[in-house]
Length: 290
Image (cartoon, rainbow, N blue to C red; front, side):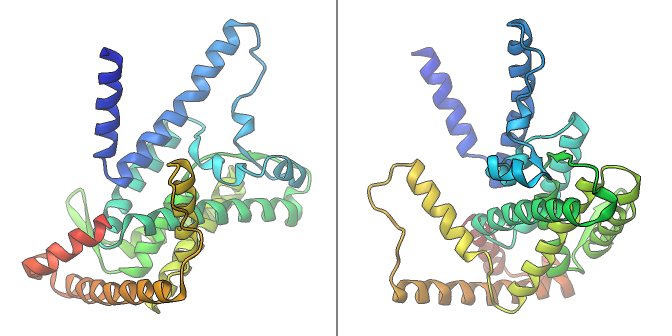
């Protein structure tokens, strides 16, 4: 009974976390799992078996066909504590800004689409550029997804200012710094990682461009996530197919909400957050929880 109570409390605390905090916790758990497995393998006399190899993304096309899940699973693991720390720190700051304006499902779509596109850029680069012709490395890390979130916000709200030490800096300058830094570091080590970062950044930029034009390119991805959640939750009612009327009404609601968010965001950029009315602040808060 004591263990059941502890398990219940842990589940309750996890459910009360916001989406960013949940992603950070999951990444932390995945960071520790390989070390735990390695300890058991070592104690039983199998120190040379690699647990992480089943989840890292290889640039070898045959390996990808053999392990297709790695196009996503690679993002849950990190090569060291500081690799994890800096990724999660950047996700925490950029993700909280994002969730003040957009719903959780949209963040999930951008994050994992960034992960996938970053992985694709990594694979294509190592099979296209001559400099990589004699190498087929593997990659882990959530940086592509994190960069997708950051650059999305840099494009969507470039004049948004954040406090760094004793001065304010526009978000667009931070994004520009990270993109240029990744590009110029390609020849000096971890080329695959930097290329994946650029892929995630490109996805985030393009996504923001489309959102500004009223087109949510991640809507189909969100529906896929709903379907997967439905399978794992063993829901009796399957929501695979939806009527055209429902899709149209949902799209209209999203567009109306997006127009209102855009107007509020423009007001924040020009006059600051304190210029918002209480109703506008409440609307942003409720939108971030959807």
